[in-house]
Image 1 (tube, rainbow, N blue to C red):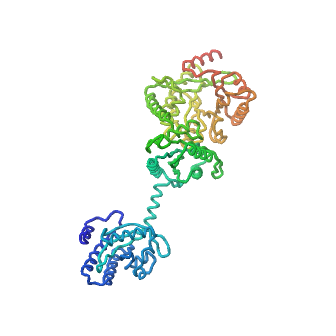
Image 2 (cartoon, rainbow, N blue to C red):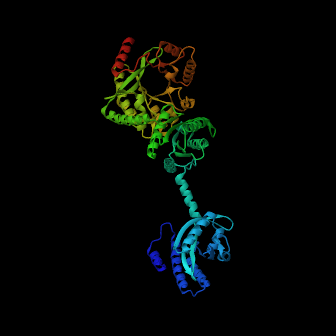
Image 3 (cartoon, rainbow, N blue to C red):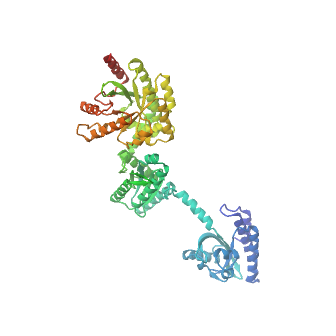
Length: 616
């Protein structure tokens, strides 16, 4: 492009977003200077000293434009040497101005690889193949300090010889700022691992590379078990420390070239680089399970957790990122359901099971509207009188096509989807209404127990005020209702959990701690919260006999509960021997098939009527 055309083009064009205004003015100045020098060249009557005076005059114009912008101006000959440098360029590079202008070789300020590229570019411009160029590259100051520069250059004819004139800017600060922004966008600030966005890029690169080489790699989803419990029990600072320590342990278990990333929360992803074998994958997963199982020291707390892993392989389990991610998630879900602390490979049956869960979820939503649920009631008896003093309400789902569906199949799904909230409210409304009738007709002090899921204590969970109001509307006192919770609720006892439990307590509603002995069984929870009943889990009752270790555990639980002023209910009593042993060691109440199986409301009414007749 002729110089005059270039100048007109620049004057008519808005500056690019990434170029500062003052720099753009500098470029315009260079284009103008280029034109001036071209006139000098064509006339071929001027000395190079005149050119340098013109450069100095142009420099003074730049200084007037923006005194805060450092613009280094230079001329380079066909030997790739500086033949002119302004004071700003000399200051930028840490040299004396006269030294730079005296045929100073560029290989002293650019690293070898960069210098080679500059020589190629310079040759292209000097030959006229390329008239002008702009690029960014590293440079070195005289003391060896690395900097980043942005270089503009244009070719002119001076005294019949091709010469490059241009300008150079120190962009080190901008590069450092860009590096910080890039790292924040691609790395997790807590663990310093690549984040979700970076992982997506790594996964796509792994797919492309493995497809080209026709080699397999593995994608593994990792999830820390019991992380929420630790976070809730010891605070977020302890949770953050746990994540940092876990990340370091995971990093120590993998090979160079494998890529570990944090997805968020307590979830990590791992790409095992190709090529892989099943033995290699198994070995790395085994090291990970063993490493995470070792105790963590979180300040003064000693904590033990585990980790679950879901494994999928390219191309066996999928040939694109979406499929691999979905299948790894299904494999992780399977590992969790199998008891955690293990690794599961994706199998096609998992995909089919996921489809079944989606269909079941759709049916579950319809079941609420279609009133396909009903309640059964299992008696809880006084161990000494064998009279029914309360009953536990148990939900059942009668599916129109699939028949009776076990709560073990649909309750977890309801908890995951949030449907447990309307279902839980329906259970309360139905059971409390039935309780009011039984109290009027058969037993004025009868009590109903309702299981309340940890999910019902979430941010948008049950409203204790509405339950309390409904009890009062039916003429029922608070102590007519017992809410059964698990230790998981108490471990997650943040403000919204504590406030709900306090509202129940203030209304006189009783609280039973279900499945006691199977979780942390921490006395701290019993001291912190007002609990009225402990329910000994049926796993301690099932094999109970006079010489069993379960007897010692049951004795300890009962003695501890009584010292704390709590009553004890033993679940799963199926034989007279179990009843007699538990009665002899002071257990207060029993529940199980030996007394009665779960029954309909009508059957429970008849049972209460018969017991009332017997008492009379």
